[in-house]
Image 1 (spheres, rainbow, N blue to C red):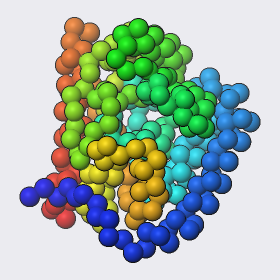
Image 2 (cartoon, helix red, strand yellow):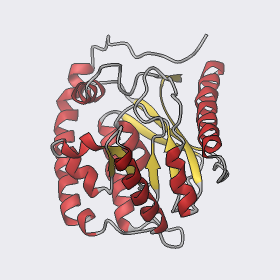
Image 3 (cartoon, rainbow, N blue to C red):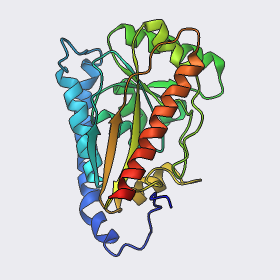
Length: 270
């Protein structure tokens, strides 16, 4: 039997968590606005030198780590991320995936264009170097690919979710291959990253978006939820195969799927 678990709603302590988490969240958002205005907006082009992260990258990681802790999520790194520049490809379950990856390595994310119009969130994302893509538009994708290559060639890492959207209940969808062309054009490595959530030794498969759940409802649900570990598994890089982008996508998906399955198997044996 699978050890994956859907979180239950019976939690008498949930109302109490809102009492301290909501004020902390509001304060942390204000701090984020100040940091974006005073530091990040003036240092978006900062890059890693000799394997050392610039101050602005460490600031992003710190802010993201604290944000996750306010939501009861403890970011845990497994494996080692490659030095910049690299194309990170990860499974996608919710908005927390961006902060989870940011807690371990600052990178420019590719995200849906709708986020740019979200109050405050869009501004913060833009200041964080997010590359916005309008789904279903080939012209938008071509522009996004060009920007990705420019960022990678400028020694900045880029992170993408090749599924093209968030999944539900632990289902890993097919990876789109075209996005891998950016790594080939920029001649940088591709590193798969597996993201998963556990509580009490059991994997929680609906820690991200539930089907038909809105962004606001997801935030409210997670903000009152019991603490969880949020694991970031940096996996072995995928070899470049210029004649087979599809194979690069398939291999990335296979490695992420294996990491998710191994985590479930390990928890079941514990």
